[in-house]
Image (cartoon, rainbow, N blue to C red):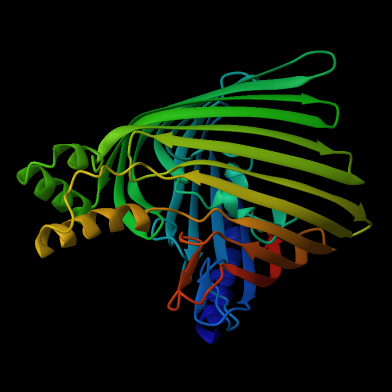
Length: 398
């Protein structure tokens, strides 16, 4: 923890020195969060938290620089510093770097490494100060979708007498890492195409999004098993382990906020051609109210996953080798099945200053027997997939 504090302090000192020398064309901004968590089950981890106080999984610092080249073009870069994140694809380094071209007030184009704008809060998912929770609802935002991509994004905004609206589309590719259940794999997505529609009417916002892409998994155990099955003539079983196919995702959300109280709901569906990657229908509902500088909120989240189908092609009880082969084949599907997680989260936020917030949350979590991913247990036989997560957070922007 001392090393983390020292890192944070040295980072802020460097930021302050830079900001003092910045000219009018350069705008500096940043965000930071220190999160402490405790999960009340022994020999179990949930999202990187266990039954000791842990600061690592969600504490981070982000620094963004915006350089205005002229009235039409601007350059934006963002880096993120973390100590130890849960996902290998969410570590310290360059978050995005892109060129913005805005020929009119209604049209904006971006080119470079961009945030994937799939979820309602994708653009600021790391900026905890921007939302009431400490962590965004896990069933939706902790899926095996990727946060960034390389490509182009175009937004067209328009408005009428009683509404504001926008249409956004993007195209590109992604090379990175994905985690499905207990399986971590290299991921390549080409021909990534997405479209987003948004409508604001008074205090209401409606949003719909969809994307698709040609995906390829780079997981050596999967490829070796596929090759072995084909060599032995079990072609139907081998086909279920294909590492190339189409991936699609859909999203719907609604938000009502009149500054006194708010309601938000978000739903996503993920489907792929990969039998080893389950389809998912996940959602959350949240509501809350503001009393001065204090915000209270309650959130319900749920996820429903459908595992791919195995082929009962490998004979069992014939030989030990075939039994081992069948067990290894079945284990791949068991390992890639995420939890169907149900959760209730009660939280409070106190805006200490205009740029600093303190938060506290407690979440009750309930998973299903026989599946994993959200939970990691060294004693899975005796763990009933239930527990409580306690979080405290300090959030600020600068």
